[in-house]
Image 1: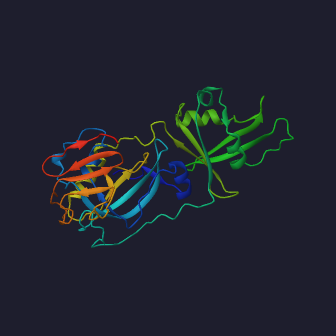
Image 2: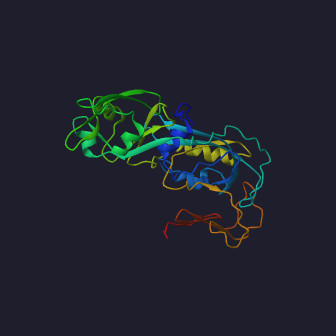
Length: 310
């Protein structure tokens, strides 16, 4: 995995950009990693039989890093997974339970607003219409006695780059606009109608930040090399490995909470022979897993998948 692909982001700012539906695993969580499902996110097809990883790999999360993509400005997180000898569905502790790099809790004082860019925001002579509630809750107060009320707004993107916009309150009816500097930001970030900008103030009187959610947010495909590297690392006996996770609407399909499947009414997972130990490298019996609206079956020499949504 190439270093320098992402920059660390303050957790409060990261969460505001990712959205409230995003779930971040915690350091020390027991999870199950599926190399085969991970391979489906690669940018080109992978001959999965060439990667000798087991269908399901019990792991413990050793570290979580909250980052921003240097090319797209999308937020993502990087997990270090440590394969364990825990049985799938068994929970329990890792044989090597070193836990490092836990991110702090997001600050409760964060304020933010998001707006989907309209065609006029992108093409109307470099002006962005700011929602009134957003301008009044995030931006410094305007001097309404001025003609017209104007101020300079200073923000930083998630890479730390400084941007200046002229905030003006004018028109009939009056509205908040960002003018000078906005067109340059749009061009630099290659924003289009349908993308979303997020303005964040992480604390009262604190610095303003600006993040981006692309219209195809969370659908970035990973390079084949990155996916294969994670698959091969998972196949090695006990070697920690790294996966990068771009948020989606819901949880990732290839990293699952290692839940206790012994309970007969567990809504997430039902496994034939759930009490039989599943050791890394030994394929289990056919396993039926309920994942975010999809039924997926893993087991034996072949894998059947059903994408029927409920």
